[in-house]
Length: 298
Image 1: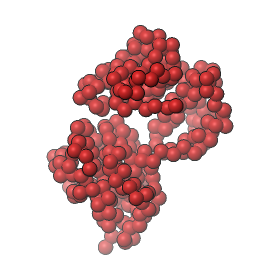
Image 2: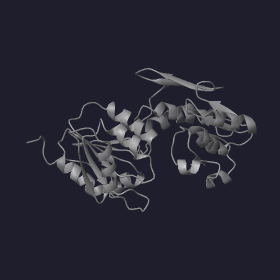
Image 3: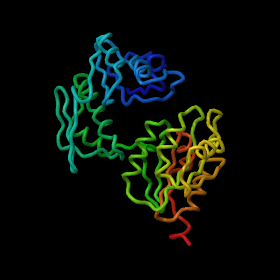
Image 4: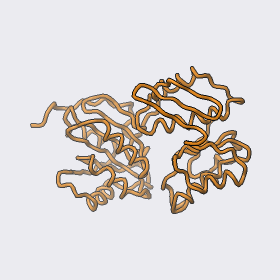
């Protein structure tokens, strides 16, 4: 059974379970009102899922010292990226090595994004750490990498225009999304349907995307915690320095997406991001297949 911690770790309800293997992925600034003002504080909260004598996989390349110290304090079996396991690759394939096992000639994960090898390496470390209790064959690993799916995480839906769905909702994940969008190649215009919670650190999120997004479609979301589309637009207007960028406000993600499609050319792309509510709002009736009403601008 795999359980995902909802917030932090030490005080999360999932922590009532004594884990056989804990996995701590990236550690960044989010939920700071609950977890603390910096990475050391947040790392200390996440470290609460460790158990004495049990493996803990830390796939953050530069983990806070608080994570390392807590593992030593309680006697957890710490696996760190770069020392206890690592990966390397070329244009065709990649390989992974851990304490007692190697996987060579692996196909790249079916998921898109530059961070997927770090994620896959952490998963393989967990498999290696648990190999006596949970043996997994090399063929199963290869199949998993080839067929893995994760809707809403840099999910690219082919169409005219192309559609990118990403639930990125904090500065760290938005920075990863921005890098992935930049690597996609040239699109005449990039449209963004953006809805987000009001308690998120919106300024760095908007600033990171500003060079990439040409037209913004800010949307309300169906939860009291969300910032309104008008509030998001106001924040963006305070930060915007691009004379060519435009924005509008909509009452729902679907209405915002419909407007973006109407304004798009076939060669453009539309990005839907900012919250699970935003992406969920455009997936409510299935995965959209977009077709712009015109092929070129007048």
